[in-house]
Length: 244
Image 1: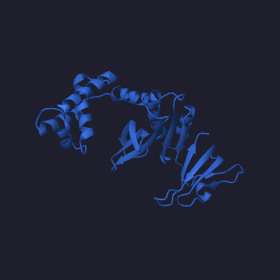
Image 2 (image 1 turned 90 degrees about the vertical axis):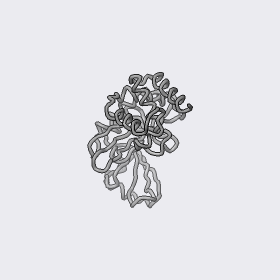
Image 3 (image 1 turned 30 degrees about the horizontal axis):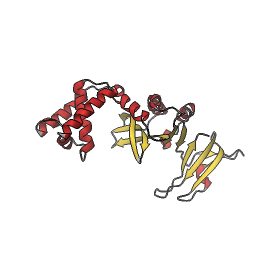
């Protein structure tokens, strides 16, 4: 009975938030969300055991399979209201956006933009594509989609963190245009100078494993650098760029 009551509340909440789906779709979506929350893994056979629906296990597996394969849910209409609700009730004074790419073997790549919260990443937007790196245009598209849902800068500080794949000048320019603070990775063979016109690779700054350092007015463009040589990796200089 508790499972049925929870499912009914989930269906009502999805409707109240304005999730763009039909009533049968909301019913199945709420059931899937409920099963995912309580199941040990995401295999359909396991999820079927957590569904608040009456039926044989095999029939419930087929119900899930049909829902996932044939229902044409519009991502923006369904997930946008959830993102808006999440960020409207954000409990902290900062929203930290993190972008990363996850590869599924050598078949697919998932570009994800999420909000960091208590050592977890809450997904806000994502894109599945053929295996490989992503362009600045695709990265900015995700940032642009999320931007209208973010709280006002008068209420919170917006941060953006990403690895070297996301260091494109256009991405940094977008962050600057939004008045965000950002840190992106740079490769250690990138050259810089400190105003004296002498160019050298970032790796020559001489950080030892575990060290951190700060440099101001470094000329890639006029920026500041935070440097970190992480202990648990093979030697590789980790650098970040911040808006100043």
